[in-house]
Image (cartoon, rainbow, N blue to C red; front, side, top):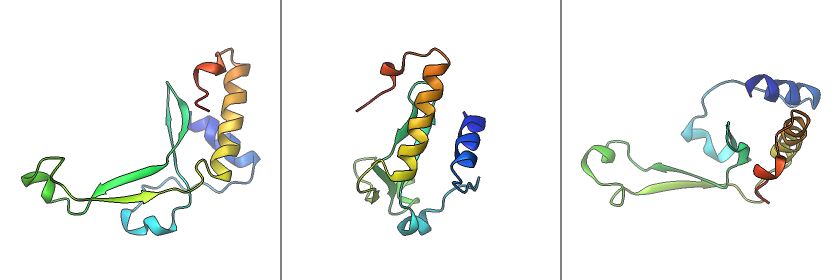
Length: 103
């Protein structure tokens, strides 16, 4: 999947940086997606993180205070371009694309 994404991004002149995102920079994020062998590529609408990582040691999941990053209008333009090409590649490989389409 990484080679596929790199190829799609290169063809569409989408810059790629292979670094872990920093939660402190979340206000700069405009869109996000995840990849998996089952769903291929899925846009993200919300990411949650605990307000305090230390609270995870002393509180249950329901007691922890969470911060959210919401992505309005998901999927974003870049994610939609990549997702479209991933689906086209999957159909050319003989996978039943209807299994992956969540619209």
